[in-house]
Image (cartoon, rainbow, N blue to C red; front, side, top):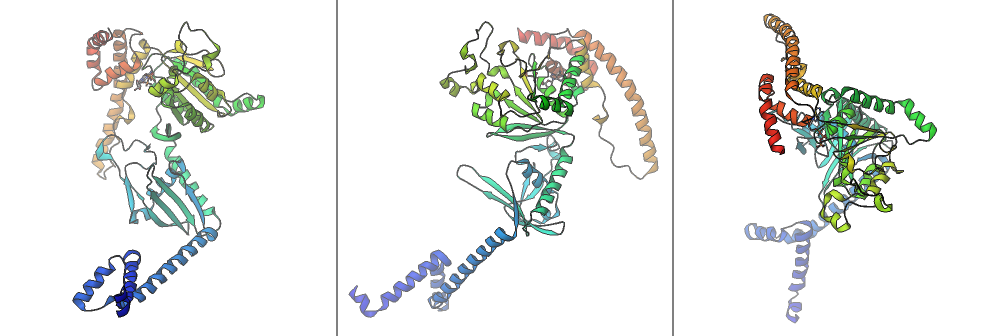
Amino acid sequence: MAESSTNGSLPMQLISDAQASILDFVLFPGFTRISAAFEEHLTVDLNFYVPLLCIFGLLVFICRHIYECLLGLLETYFTSTVHLRYRDEAYDMFIMWTASQSFTQHARSSLATTELSSTSARPGRSNDGDTKQKTIYYTPWNGRFFIWYNGYLLVFRREYRAGEFNSREEVSVSCFSRSPRILKELLNECCMEYSKFVHDKTSLYEHRDGTWVRSIVSDVRSISTVILNESKKRELLKDIEDFLDEKTRRWYSNRGVPYRRGYLLYGPPGTGKSSLSLSIAGHFGLNIYILSLSTVTEDRLRDLFAKLPSRCIILLEDIDAVSPKRPGDTETKDSHQIVAGSPSQRNKSVSVMVSLSALLNVIDGVGSREGRVLIMTTNHITRLDDALIRPGRVDRKFELGLTDKKMTAGLFCIVFMPMEDDVPPPEKARSDVLVRLVEDRKVDEAARSQGEEVKRVERLAEEFAGRVPELKFSPAELLSFLLEYRQSPEEAIDNVEKWMTRIREERE
Ligand SMILES: Nc1ncnc2c1ncn2[C@@H]1O[C@H](COP(=O)(O)OP(=O)(O)OP(=O)(O)O)[C@@H](O)[C@H]1O
């Protein structure tokens, strides 16, 4: 120590070491090595420039800080921002809009997906099925992007924040103005475009992590494709139509009666309870929220009911999963509190998480939305507690049964009746006049032969229905058999006896 202080070289060395380490770790990683290399090969002592570099680094640091402060001030006082919550429909609307904008094509960082929604929803079903027809969508990703919209410069930020437990995406759009008017205009446009897109489609919501997420946007399933007793179908549709009428809403509201309607669809498996509910949603242009009681806890159930919009269909499937009542059980004080399973059992089985009392509370509790149509389905009506299906909770009950002759023929027609959309439209007309004439003639011939085909299928449908005994098979079973022979109705008729024998044997 004494030696070092006498020659005076160590303090200098210490200073330059300290400077070097600041440079190495803070401002200029690898400085020491580079400096050594310079000294060795070019005989230039970089240590001479260290103070200058430190000052320069400090200046850069100060400037950057000032820039951040100014940007923060600008953002706080002179810009307006709209934040979009990931997994919310507004997010999907905006992202869908960006995918069609030209600035997206030039974004240097973009996300390539086969879906445009936050929830892996399928906007339309164009991306299902044949992989050759899949579309890749590009949307700006992880950065700040500038957009010109109606003459205004907007900044679109989309940042991905990876967390230890959950990762999330942050999306916002800002404008350089204290008024958010232009941002609202933009989001209105996104909303309108989106509405046009989903106009003739049914949005199907399922729950994920305690919130409703749109899982499918599908083409409306025509109610005519659900085969059941026609008068029952008409009665059900009429009832829902009356309920949804504005006059009915006023009537309920004027008399202080909760504006809700409940239906129970019951019958054996595969008789069309879910299909009917979906097509009812499509028929009335309502979104459908599907909930299986075996997949939620009571708290979740309460939350999900509270988050329902005011006009929608909520489909509660397999409600017998919560009802503890069996034929012969006596109604006790506890019957409304009985959970189908003790707490320990509840932990073991996912199918017994909701008690009857919790279900009744959400059905008619204060959190329950006005204007919602509740459809409950069950395969075992006898297992349901009377309290669950009393009027007010279930206003109408509809049984969906096994096939009778008419239904069998109807199912046959669904499979084999020619439909306009079966054949894709011809490619764009070619200019060749002769070719077009030939095509026109083909269209006429097709129309004529289609009429004959309709009569033929109707005749075959009657023959098929004559061979299938009534009330022995579910529509799902028959449909699945018919689809095997969808290219040939005659073969379906020839093979139905064999199929019925096989099914009977399987059942025994
Ligand atoms: N009445 C029907 N008309 C047309 N198709 C039907 C009918 N019933 C069932 N299907 C067809 O059978 C399949 C199953 O039907 P769905 O899921 O609606 O029956 P479900 O009664 O809800 O069955 P589960 O009780 O097992 O849930 C679907 O593909 C559906 O298209």
